[in-house]
Length: 402
Image (cartoon, rainbow, N blue to C red):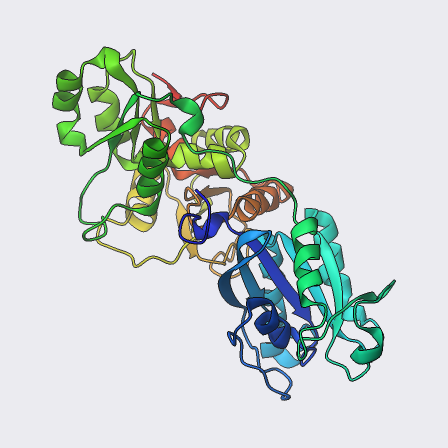
C-alpha cells in the first residue's frame, strides 16, 4: 500500500519538532504542511501539548509531523509538558531542533541530542524566525540549516533533507510473504460484546487487505463457524488459519493439526517488534508470585467495552493460569510506566502489551527496549494467550507449535 489513503498511520514516517518556547516550531510545521495547522503566536508557551498532523512530503511520502511544547517551560506543569515532549522521541523517525537564527544554539538541545543518539534517530538543526534570514538563507554551517517559515525560503530543500535523513528501514509485511497467489487463508474474527459495531478491528482489516492485495483469498468467519468452513473448503486447500488471540483455544481445537495456525497479534509482533524477545518474556508467566505487579499496556486509547480484552480477559486468564494473587495495572496511549511511575507505583514484574497496531515499529521497539533495559520481561497479547492455552509460538515462522 502507498499514498496517504493506503498507508496506515502507524506505518507513516514520524517527524517531530523540538525547541524552546517561541522558537518558531509551529510556524515551521505550517510551512512544511503548506497550510495553517498549528496555532502561531508571539506569546511563549502557545503549544502546550504535542500536536500531530498527517500529510505527505515528497519524495518522502505519507508522514506525521508533530509539534511539541517548548523544552524551556517552567514550573511543575512546565516540567510535565517537557516530559511529554521528550516522550515523543520514542516514536520519532527524524527529529528537528528549531532555533532562532539570531540566537546561540541552546543547551536545551542536550536531552534531545542524547535521546536521538540512544535511539539512532537522525537530528536536523534548523535556524529560522529572524530578520537575518535574507542574508543567511540556504547557507550551511556548524550551527544548522537556515530556512524562513515566513517567506518559504529553504523549505523545499529542507523537505529534501528530511527525506534523505529518514532511515530507509520500513515495517516488513504482515502476511504477504507467507502466501502465494491463489492461496486460501481463513481469518477468524469473533463478534462479541467487545467488538466494534459495524466493522472489523484494525489488525483484522489490515491482514485481510494485505491477503487480497497478494492475490490470496481471505475467508472470514467466527470461531463457531470454523469447523464447518474447514470441511467445506477442504483442509488440504487451506494455507493457514489466523485468529483473534482471545479465541485461540476454540480455534486450535477446530483447526486440523496439519494446518498452520497463528494470530493477528503474533503477525503484528513479527512485523513491528522483536518476536523472539516477546516469546522469551512469556516464560515469566510461569514465575509470577503472589503480590507481583503486572502492567497491561495498550498503544491506543479505544473505548473500553464490556468484556474488554486488556482490562478484563487478560487479567482473568493470567490469574487462572498462575493461580496467584496479582496486582494488575493498566496504561494506554502514550503512557508506558515501566519505571514504576504513573499508574504503577511499584516496578512491574511483567509487561503484557497489545499487538501495537496503532504504534509505529520504532515505538514498539522502543517499548521493548525500555522494558528490557529495566530488566522487566515483556510479552504481547497473542504470545501470552497462546502460552496460557498450551500453545507455543515458533519465533522463526510466527506460527505455533500445536
